Amino acid sequence: TAPARAPDPDAGVVNVAHRGASAYAPENTLAAFRLAQAKRADMFELDVQETKDHQLVIMHDTTLARTTNAEEVYPGRGPWKVADFTLAEIGRLDAGGWFARKYAGERVPTLGQVLAAMRDRGLGLLLEIKSPELYPGIEGRIAAELRRSPSWLRYDPRERRLVVQSFDWESVRRFHAVLPKVPTGLLGTPKAADLPKLAKYADQVNPPFAGLTEDYVDEVHDAGMDLLTWTVNDPGDMERAIDLDVDGIITNRPDVLHGVVDGS
Ligand code: G3P
Ligand code: CA
Image 1 (cartoon, rainbow, N blue to C red):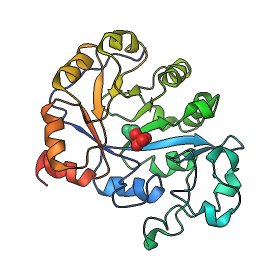
Image 2 (image 1 turned 90 degrees about the vertical axis):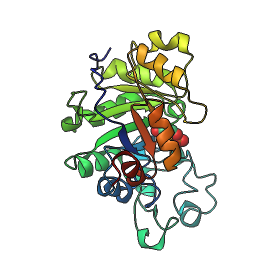
Image 3 (image 1 turned 120 degrees about the vertical axis):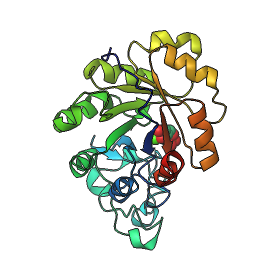
């Protein structure tokens, strides 16, 4: 298990830009991650999947259709699953034009490109392993990519440099077995009774905001884990989440969260 964290009650709520500052730039692109810095997020979140040739790319949906021009570039290859295209093929796609004309030409980044581009920008990374059941062995390949960028592997809980999370808790457990010092998170709402067992390999429980209660936040804290909630874009909901004593908020609008937290 990871080294015990020392929760600091004065640390404030961690501000995580969901898929980058995705209210303002196309999700899961370098533009959105850079904008997360400009909007003063503490961390940025992204989703990792795998191409046909086992390269790690950043994409939320398991198909390319919504956030690229794949339908146009590769007609007849529907439903445009990420796993059915090589990295070279995905590299030809426009991942920004669907969002706004000024972002046309943004590419689907690889994990390696993101780690390099964001290394010295002072933000931490919340890395989601997306749909790992489609990509057997992806945990080991993510670990190998991280080892090639060791500055992301500094482990100091106060830095919040890197957390690896998934809705698939077995995938989190497999990742933890490979790189046990990297903090991990479980997406979803595990039963309170299971929390002590899950805390053996997880450092965070990250549930949706809808239905979240103060009692549940307390249960997670009692099990020694932090809780980050998603996806909270409304200032009133941000205030309510802070009142529940969450440790972090995952938002498409990190600037709005900043305004709520410190009035700027
Ligand atoms: O980090 C939380 C959030 O990303 C989980 O949901 O669907 O946006 O990946 P989703
Ligand atoms: Ca995600």
